[in-house]
Length: 121
Image 1 (cartoon, one colour):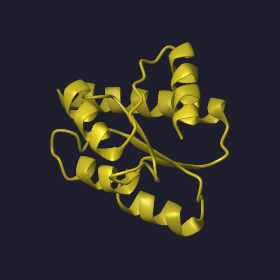
Image 2 (cartoon, helix red, strand yellow):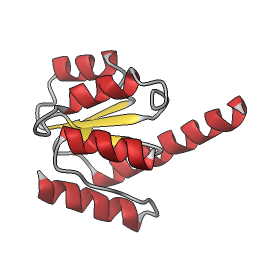
Image 3 (cartoon, one colour):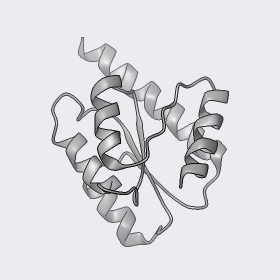
Image 4 (cartoon, helix red, strand yellow):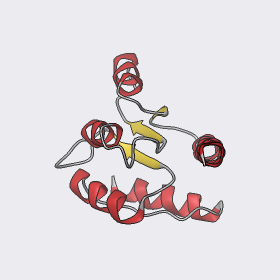
């Protein structure tokens, strides 16, 4: 949902993050390769290449496998959560979700990933 993506990006930017929105899974892959983000938020149902397929690509690409990935979905069923976490999602948010909870999760996972990168250097 482009409107939801823009609202989410706006709120993340208001909280001090830099956010980029894409329209489909293939665009997500391109942006990930170009930007090398600290965290990725994926909607399970993005067009052309699902959020789950993008998640699998991230986890199977050594350059990006460490990036925290948050899945958001309208489904929200337990099975969706299980599948997302089994494939390496860092967090899972069924819609509707609290923007402040999502922002807190983003902040926490970026901080943790940054600390892990620093410890590995």
